[in-house]
Image 1 (cartoon, helix red, strand yellow):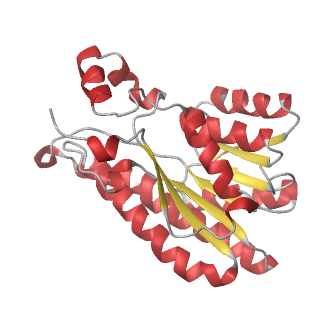
Image 2: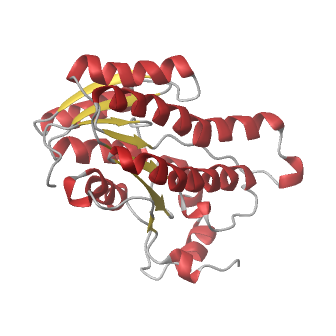
Image 3: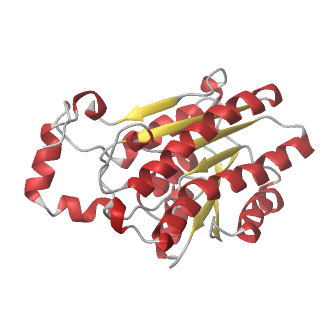
Length: 256
């Protein structure tokens, strides 16, 4: 991908699923990657190995995006280790099912903190360093089709992703004059650990597949390729948009 070689990318939640796929892809394209994870380090170590085997460079950082000190550490590590941070991919996310009337305050706070508050303040820390260095940058948020599409039983998730859509739109306008682009990638049903329960429930899986015109679930590579494009020089005039990766699901979805 044109313009990724030598760039430095921070990717949150890069120890598994979509984040791991993005980190591998950007690393293979020549970017130096800060591999963020929370919890156990095995997945992040696997990501770093894949990047290095492809001839790239990676650095693992354990950072919780809901904690300001961790967010600042993540950005500072990129600058201290590689001398820059050109690309930010806000990928870390959580979801939890509950009927709206039974949703605990704790679950609401957790989901909104990870999915919306985290990207807000990590992006802020990322942009402050760009301003100090007078550098342009790329911000890509991993949103969801549910930034726009209703998802009964997941009101907290929809709220967080809808907020992320508006944050992206606002920042595209505010940061554009600084040479910083901001876009969302909105995956549909992707084969990742977060969808393990769905993948093991054949009736629900088949009902979902019937709603997807392309007739299959997406892969992390389907998402990673688009992120690599948006982070590259080829996308230098693209900002303020959501790009849906869902096999046509949003255009064909209906509740069973």
